[in-house]
Length: 640
Ligand SMILES: Nc1ncnc2c1ncn2[C@@H]1O[C@H](COP(=O)(O)OP(=O)(O)OP(=O)(O)O)[C@@H](O)[C@H]1O
Image (cartoon, rainbow, N blue to C red; front, side):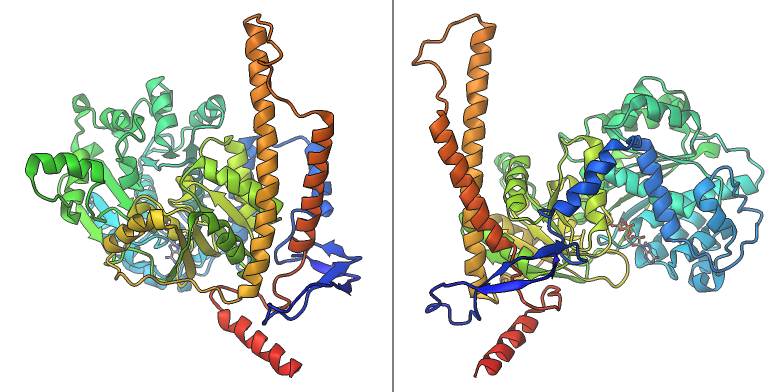
């Protein structure tokens, strides 16, 4: 809701006999929506104006946008209070970092704050970058990985909860190794040194930015290579010969296959990182990934000790063990006549064999329940067709940033239409969307304190967006891994808290039970409570109206599409349709009637959704239900 100005409240005549806890109903008239910090409405006309103006401006290219984002991130992290002193390693030319250079070069981060990193003998530019980020001490996974990777030069299989800092655990050894090689007089400024593979484009860009942050006091070049953006532009970027490439498997393989010059010696990379490794090795996904691995591990190119490569394999669910899917189970049972459950050790062994790793260090600090500490879990058990009520209720009752996950694109699209009608301003993210739209939606979501993202599992892994309060599983995910990763979008870095709410219909109950079993939880479901039944009733009404509008609009749209298709086919085949073959179309009168009905429903809906659900100034950060309860108690005291 926006803040209101010039409010005029007018009593509304409604029968309140059965609404015990309801205080009153009023209609707000003569108001003006002012964009506020909490819950901006997408219905407001104010929002459209600058957008239209922006359209006229020449749009920046995608790569410009990405670069701008990277710069924005850099600037937001820079502590400019202390003067800068150039050091041997930190030869950062102003030409290379034009926009950040001024701040960075004039500031000398205080290395006292990063004392606890000094045990790893990190090069000074890395310590400075950590100081700028205010990362005072390593996280657990970093503490355990760095000595193995940097001092013992081991391959690593790393498993730690979501949001625990795995990116730096593999990035620091790479950057340190480049700096060390330079220090030893090697000219490797144009050498492809490390390749990092991640499963999604957004994650690739995020990891690229993260590493660029780490390299801000160096000359190291980092480049992202992802599908969906121009191949030519990315080709040009590779002509700059980046030392670190972060990529999705499909696009990088395409470029390797086509003989891209900088990738010609990909078998000589010193570091290979497979982030979200369990996802990368999933059957029928990333078909190009085995080809890429084969090229990197080409037997004819057996490397001398000089080129010994280190491989880092990371994921929050790397060692999560559970029974395979039922269809695999059935097949195996027929053969072995016994139940098969892959153990954590077997799973890790499979990665070691697939990647041909020799004596890797296994750093597995996942806890029994795998989920990140600080995530509060809840479940709503409800019939399928009531999920929309609970969803909207949760959105209305709790402030903060939220992500709604669904299993299919169709479901996400339907919810998008519904939540738009309910003025929740959801941003969409699914794999088939144009890449620039995906990035734009993510950026818009990130910016808003009460942002709402509606996504498929393309957003489930790795995305590191600060301050996400609530994750809603609109549909129960089919695997425990997805549940862990989805929920893990809410608790990032040190000392964060978040909530994961699953909407579970009777038909999904066995999936939910299986997830709980795999994650070692007991069978007592942590139930979500409806604190305000009267609000739930109002929410239900609004959802019903929206569904009604959505149903009418979808029906009309589908009928129109069908009619167009039949007519197009008939024209292409040069066939004249008989009257009874012609697709049914609404006549003018029916169309007008339908439009009036939609108009009426929309007006009714608007009056419902424009009213604040809770007349409290205070924001209801989940799960502070006691705030509502004490408000009700206070109101009834005032009444009596
Ligand atoms: N030592 C540190 N101190 C404070 N914050 C840190 C530290 N290391 C990393 N972070 C921050 O923690 C957040 C999560 O880090 P990162 O994205 O690497 O987690 P992750 O373990 O890879 O999570 P996921 O499994 O979900 O991909 C990031 O915002 C990162 O900047």
